[in-house]
Image (tube, rainbow, N blue to C red; front, side, top):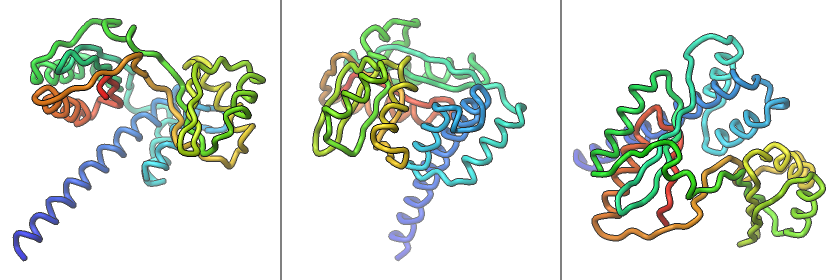
Length: 238
């Protein structure tokens, strides 16, 4: 029983640590979003989307509420968004979005991950041109024509609409995110819950990695995501 109990205890601790990191990342992002755009989800679409996403990822209500209260107070940490770009294992292209109160520290930490994976961090724009910046929505419907019509009426220039397994994925320009979200909610009903609703960097082309490159890539991404300042990692690996 001793070994089985120890394995179970270690597994529970690892799960607890992972949850704590997820809660921390959402808490920081909600705080910054609320501080910059207001703490009322009805008037801050980005915050509304973020809270919905946090709930889908099972972030407790008290974590969300605490971040909003902190943002409403106007004090606290002064986090700023920063993005780093570079080349990962197997010539993969990677973009790392962070929220930090110390850019020097965060740059050093992210650069260390690149160096540890025997890769190179690049300058701003070095790989961004190989990604599209989209608002990505996944809806629980296969009504492609209806979705297209709703977006056109809202003057949203949808770049692509895909239907698969009864779900519709919409790719809209990131600067039309708010218009697209409002149009989709108006068409589907305010009670509709998106399966996905966020702004992403989507690679224009993807590549497959194998063997040592794939193994090192997985370790590299895990190192980045383990950093508290890192919010999201985008890449072009299948």
